Each structure stands twice: as structure tokens, then as C-alpha cells.
Length: 194
Image (cartoon, rainbow, N blue to C red; front, side, top):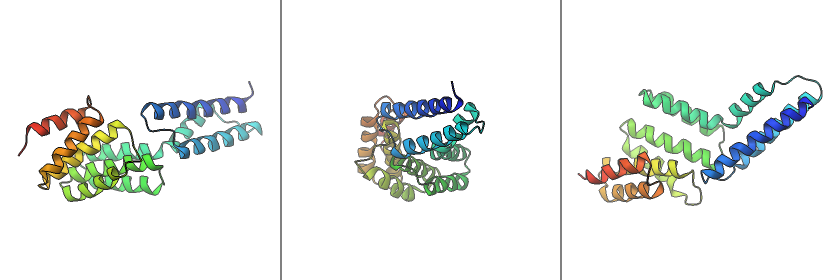
């Protein structure tokens, strides 16, 4: 097999594999992800075709880092949040937004920024962020992220004294993904009404 065909195969399988995962999460295939993946695959195949050696494993790593850059920054931001390094986490979320994520990626960044604001004891800021991200009914980042967003918005509402809204959001977290840790936490929060 010609090396350029191997690079094409690796790139196409990567795009199809992650595309299938997105459909399984009910997010749909991101056009930006597909276009970036195909462009990088085309560049890699063209380089190999003109006899520039491209290691398929290195190509796959580069493809992953470029196409998943926003999600990787979110994961790193969450790591900093868990270590109470909130300023670093917020800086990473800002960087992720500057990298022009697709619509679902943007929602994921904003949900995680809202959670960080909540952990920083800034429930009003968390409310604003989470309300903004959850307001668009057309975009759905996946049930897990919706459940997390609704649960944390419920916590933010509770901390700002808006109990009726908190109850509504806890119930939405349960409806979004009934068997998730967020639904379980929402059920617990509903039992512990102030």
C-alpha cells in the first residue's frame, strides 16, 4: 500500500470514528471537525505522495490534537478547577472560546466555565453563564452535558435564593439523563430543600 493511501485511510477512519461517537451522543457530526479532519488528512496524504515521510501514528496524534483542541482545553481547565486553581481554569476556557469551537464545543466550554464560577462561590456569574448556554433549545451538547448544566444551574439558583427555579432545573437534570451522577445529585438536592 502506498504511504499516502495509508494516511488517507487513517484520517478517514478517524473522522468517521469520532463522527459515529458524536451521533451516538446525539450531538451530530460537527461540520468544523469534519472539515478540519479532511483538510489535515489531505495535507498529510499530499506530503506523503510527494515523498515527504509522514509517520501514521504521529499524523494521528497531530490530527487528534488539532481537531480536539477545545475539548482538551476544557479537560485541562476542569483539572485546574478540581485543584482550586480557578484563574487558570478560566484562562483556559477563554482560550478555548478564542479558538472558535463549533456550537456544541462552545456550549461545553460555557457549561464548564459556569461550574468553575459556581465553585469559586460566584453563583450570580454562574447563573448568567449557564442560563446563556442552556437557553438555545436548538443546540444540544449531549445528555451528559445537559444534565450537568441543569444541575449546576439549579445549585446556582439555590445559592441565590431562587428556590422555584432551582427545583425546575434539578428536575430538568433528572429528565436529561435519569441514571447519571447529575440526576442522582439533583434527586438528593430536591430532598434537601432549604
